[in-house]
Structure formats: structure tokens, C-alpha cells
Length: 83
Image (tube, rainbow, N blue to C red; front, side, top):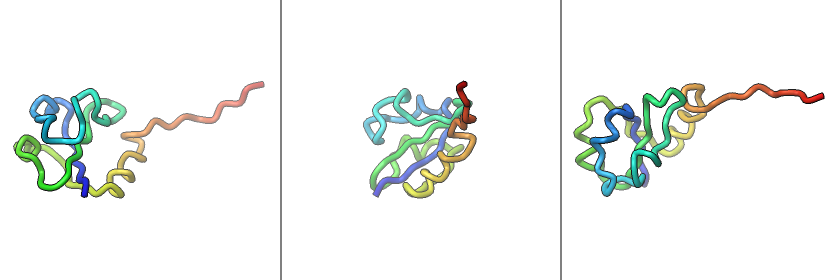
């Protein structure tokens, strides 16, 4: 089962990307203001992730899907009419 954590993007350099499902800090899903990133893993949480003290989670897939639908994570575009 996949689990998800939200960390500060400045902490991405602390992640061992051999231990998580993302391949690099560039492939992590990030908040609109680029201050937070989502890191996911399977099984037990990896040591590099556990070492980060300022994190939120673990989240399930359903919970993280709800989170990324919020305005902090998803850009909302107004409908534009063309005439």
C-alpha cells in the first residue's frame, strides 16, 4: 500500500530517492507556491523520510487526492468566453 507525506521543498535534498517512488526532487508533486512537496513510498517509511521532522502524514491515496484538489495545490482557472 502506498503512503504519502508532505514535506517542505527545502527538505527534498534530504530524501534518498532510491527509497521512495519518485525518482528525483524534480518529479515530486509540488504546491502552487512551491513550498511543499509530496513524497510517496510503499511499506515501511524510509529512514531518509523519517529523519525529516517537519512533515505531514502519512496519508492514504484517497486523502492525498483530496489534498491536491485544494487551492494550495491546484490552480483554478476561470472560464473565459471568446467572442
